[in-house]
Length: 409
Image (cartoon, one colour):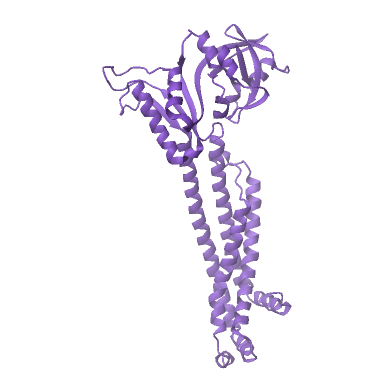
């Protein structure tokens, strides 16, 4: 491997076959470039899906009431379903520790004012566990807590942009906001990876909003997350169980698709990630195919090298060179050409991906990069391709009989 004489022979051989060596090396470099860039694009697609779902925990299930489309048990079709607090408690009772977090949601649009600044904002009235369902990040103060729910306190947690809009350069924490003419104390400020719309929301205790608006127990939506220990199959069954429990309670026909809507973020996330994984598998096959084309090109070069050096190899064998030493020489040259070309293609690909950055977000590609494991995998592919390209001509060279080789013209 570190024989200087052997390396000099390799460089002399490359020098005698400049064009063929360049074309073979170019094919390998192009192959590893295509493989790396496409693999990075696949990772970028995955990053987009992860970013899209980052606003909610990936194990979240959304349950919304609808309007029945079929008559059932004496109830006419077209009946609007209304959830109440007891629906949330029923799910807690029936599903038990399969539930990780659960919260109701009540939606209100309110006119909000702080001194001279005002605007219309959406209020989400929720339970404390909603923070973990929505991945809400508290930057100051706290989120809604159990005491707020129990005491029906008039407190709010406002988004970062609500603070900017209504308080300008002041700090909102501890101050009061008017919501439809009623004063609420700001107990927390939050930010959200969901973007500007999410950061212009206001959270309030669900019990407070229910009390103020008609003193009802009505809720608009139930959000919950499943315990990850139940796995994918358990999550799917949980969606089925939720549908069955609430349809039975509200007298909705089993085959009525519009009376109740249950959506799992997990299923959408899983489907999209499977799609991205399939694309990456296709990319891997395309890349390997291109690399094999490069291997064939390198192999053809080595066939010519062996052909041109037939007499020399015969003299080597006559002087006592072993078949293994001849195989080693040919393989070393093949792997060397492949490795240099492949790493050049790999470096160009990594540089290209880094330059692209987030410029392809409009095409659903976010931060297309390759990780260390991919580079290690590409390295093994390069070694394998180089060895494969050189093995057949190397084996042929090792079988040359000295008498035949010396008589070759």
